[in-house]
Length: 375
Image (cartoon, rainbow, N blue to C red; front, side, top):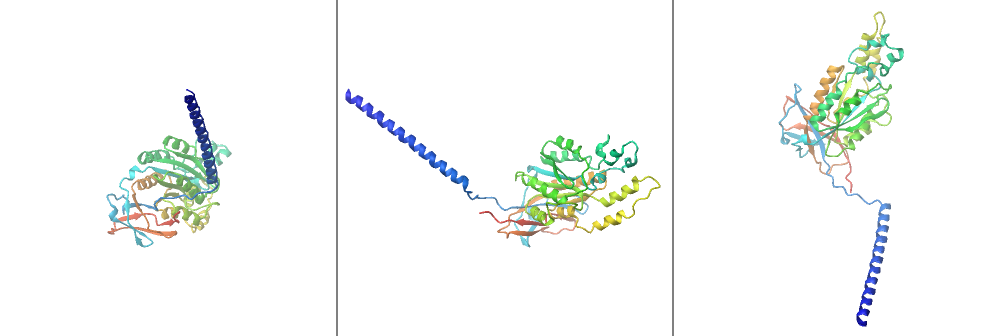
């Protein structure tokens, strides 16, 4: 009996000792892990990247009459990277890739007058107070605009592309007017709140800001920027043409532009809005024409990224040009290639048909910027 009791006591002592050692071991392990995690938090470990360096080249093919040409295959296209032919891949199901679209709208400089769909005779209408005549935001009737139908047209585009849209407005500064949403009613509602801005038109800053918004979207989405503005930049301070070109060339986004002419609108407004018997300034066209010698920023940005550019002067031409551009976005061939060990820096791209056809016109990006692969 004593031996049994003694055995039980020894067994309990052994189990207690094992438990103490186990707790001690766990404590030591916890201490070690804590030290390791602490050191790891202080030392930035290298990141391993496995992304393929794929260059997207959305390509639009139209007939000379402006109709989109369909039914082409990857074998029909040739893509040259710095003059070297590449292996072309064609996405056969582009409708499965949802679209992220940023619409950047100029509200400053001459935009408020250019968006009017008729001559603003209210400038001399005694129905309005002097303050209301100078600032249509303060009138009882909203300012008529050429882009009044934009909300409805964007709704159709979102339905057809499973898309999301964000709105950016700009004058001398850039604002996120509406964040990305798939709710078309929010876009339409926000567009009714557009008001004229200041005397600036910071196009380069606006494109830079919009491009960064698009870069934040998931990689499985097609990224598109639509710029609605005049053609020349007025007052960008955070972005240069060179830095913006490099930024866009390093991305895989498509840029299209819809531009109006400040010269045409200002001249027409002077002719139509003045009461009879008053003279308009004949030097207005001459002064404005001097500025046309500057680079056409909006059109050039679209050209580099392979997007279409169009012009409008009123609601009718805006609606027609917008419809043509959005049809072109949806009707593009989603071509791509994977360059083999590309040298870092700018690369020229040329897209052509293997069997040349004079009745077809191709539009695609003309360059990209290769970055160094991360280790």
